[in-house]
Image (tube, rainbow, N blue to C red; front, side, top):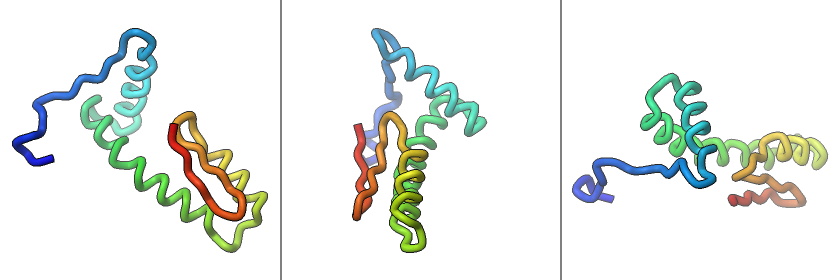
Length: 93
């Protein structure tokens, strides 16, 4: 998206069952020690790097399948699930 196409603001709905979003944004702002707008942007930028790093860890040859599965379970969240069989897979919800 070019600079001319970038909107001046973006709205995130936090009503009608989406109240959890506000709490998540507040937690991110606290974590990053910044305002809510920057926290959302930082979290969005970080997720690609974090998933790539997790995938690299799960693909290491020096880990047993059981260790990989334990790590995958630990790193999985409600939105990102890591599955380990003979290959590593990532599912987003």
